[in-house]
Length: 92
Image (cartoon, rainbow, N blue to C red; front, side, top):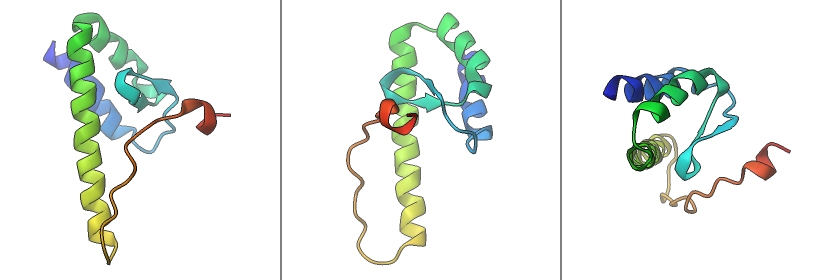
């Protein structure tokens, strides 16, 4: 179970420069390169857990991104708007 999950998330890390075109749960986007590991993960894991891990991953990423921004920008840290992915506008 954890192997499938870890495979998917490490794929996300590895392919982070690829354009994410696939939509997971909770607004998480991932590149087609990770679709196979995603399918395995979804198949082997209860959907409530899949959502839980996706949400956790998104939160960790957001924190990481805030920390990255903090390191590169001077001045007050403005929190980004709450994440809302609108796939329709970005892939038109």
